[in-house]
Length: 196
Ligand SMILES: [Ca+2]
Ligand SMILES: [Ca+2]
Ligand SMILES: [Ca+2]
Image 1 (cartoon, protein in one colour):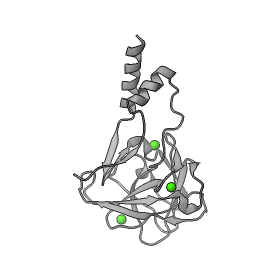
Image 2 (cartoon, helix red, strand yellow):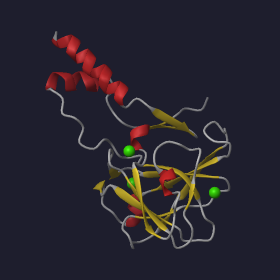
Image 3 (tube, protein in one colour):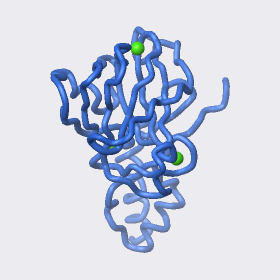
Image 4 (cartoon, helix red, strand yellow):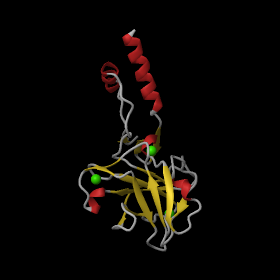
C-alpha cells in the first residue's frame, strides 16, 4: 500500500508542475514565470500581459514608467550566471531592471533571438539579468523586480522568468514519498536544449 501511495504522490507531483515552455534554446518550467504585476510609476494599462507564459501579447514600459513584477509561487535567487530572463518581441530593445523601487538600474544583456515564430508571429528576443550586477550576495532575494523604462526605445515585454528560482514553500512530503519524488526527478529548472 505504501508503495502505491508513493507512486500516486510521485505522479501527482510530476503532473502538477511538468509544464515547460520552450523558447529559443531553453526549456523553462512554467512555475518560474511571473505571477503578478503592479504599476508603480506611470500609466501602464496593459501591465498584466507580463504575467505567465502567454507570449502572444506584450507590454511596453516607456521612458519614466515602472512596473513591479512579482513572483509568488516561485522564488528569486541569485545563483550562477543569469538569474532572470526577459522575453521581448520585435526589434531588440534591452529592458532595464532594478530590484528596489528607486534602486540601481541594470540593462539586460542580450542572450539570443528566437526566430522560429512558434509562440508568436514575431521574433522573441531573450535577455538576461545577473543579480551579481546589482552587487547582491548569492542566495534568496525578495520576490519581485522592477521593470523600468529608461530610454525612448521602449521594449515590448512578453514574459519574465526567474531562471534560478524554485517553488515557494513546497508542500511537505512524508520522508518515504519525498525520497521517491526525488527519484522521479522532482524539481524545477531551466534546461538548455542541445542543438537539433
Ligand atoms: Ca511563478
Ligand atoms: Ca547570478
Ligand atoms: Ca522590441
